[in-house]
Amino acid sequence: MRLARFVIGLALVVGLLALSGPVQADPDRRDPGSSRASMQGPATTTQSTSDALSRKALQKPRRYSPAPGVVFNAALGGRADKNRVFAKIVASINHAPKRSRIRIVSWNIMSHTAVNALLRAQARGVKIRVLMDNTNLVDIPNPGFRRLKAGLKRGNQHRKQSRRSYAKTCIHSCRGERGAAHTKMYLFSQTGKAKHVVMEGSANLTVAGAQNQWNDLYTWVDNHELYNFAVRVYHQMWGDTPVQQQFAELSTGKDALGFTPLFGPGGRTKAPELSLLEPVTCTGAKDAGHDGRTIIRAAPDVIRNERGMRVARRLRELWAQGCDVRLAYTVMGIDVYRFLHQPTARGVIPMRHLVQDFNGDGEFDNYFHLKALTINGVWNGNPTTYVTLQGSSNWSGYAAVSDENFGVIARRSITLKYQHFIDHWYVNFPKSVPLLRRVDSRTVDPYAHVDMD
Image (cartoon, rainbow, N blue to C red; front, side, top):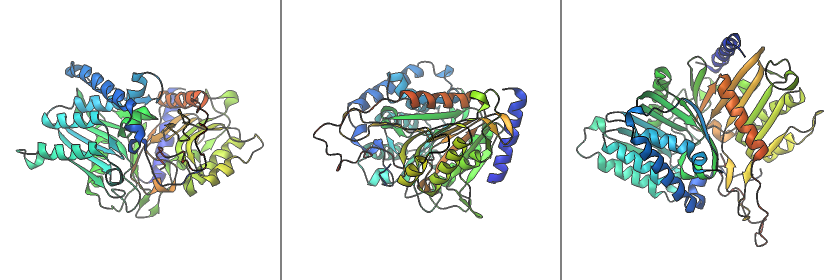
């Protein structure tokens, strides 16, 4: 389906819903999973907690089924808050039965608990495929992924070729010519009593994803059409060869799943966030904000380059027109930053930098890692639209040429969950502690532990 048909389809979906009721640094990419943040004490707590949750779930294997919908984790709070995303993925691995299939692609994989779960799954007869970006194998120490790759190879002994399991990397974008394998997707033919399970969002399979980031994970259960579509795209990723139609997406009613790079035979495709923002009208919303203002919450993690500037222009324009806009970000290009700080007649668009340096060393330790956009109000003339864009894709030029996943969910309850989650942390995000005197802010890279694209 071409992007134009996708937008038309969304307009039909929200129409049906109405009837039913109401920075400065510039390195290419880094991730806490590749930093010492993922190696320190908190990682042990996260791993042991996930193991305990997984063992508890295994006590009642027949009753287990991953809940559909969204879950969020927070880098602060109790163990359950931190592990909500990570533990759901690991529990689903642990409940995959014999002769089922697991397919995973994650930009980085760095977790003792996850590796152990995958090796146990293979031992009980699950067929496994795991993909990761090659930079996280050659540029940093990654003994966990090497152990996984070697362990799966050993476990293939005495197995038929059709039942063997493998882990490997993509050199750049698996389905494109540049970029990275930045997708975060977890596919299960069966886990517990659930079949055709698709999980995707902003979370890599790393300890840092739970310990140092705020992430989301969206789950579809028993959606055979969406699952088969995701499997077909995964097969293309596994081939690690550029395909002609790199942009791919499928709508199954209220939900759509898509993949980039943003290229096809006809050239570059418009980015999903721009396609969603263009038909927005700021006034006349029903059951939305004050005085019928359309509510927009933008949490892109990274917003920069030409793609980021296009989104910034539209967000600023919508703010000037009266929309209720908030922008929460981790990395912002200098030109985008300067542009967004130019006041409109309503003042400067509300925005917050959601990063935390908790030990005063000048480097950000915790940060918002969602890549989400919510619209609650008037869209394409419909005054009761609720739609959310989420996934792995930042709003940057590098993301446009990378393997990324995105979901578009036209559901009221889901949109409000994302909106409230963003609003909560926009208001309550933890402050950084003052810099220690011995820290020279001129030589310290504050983004040393941050995924930059």
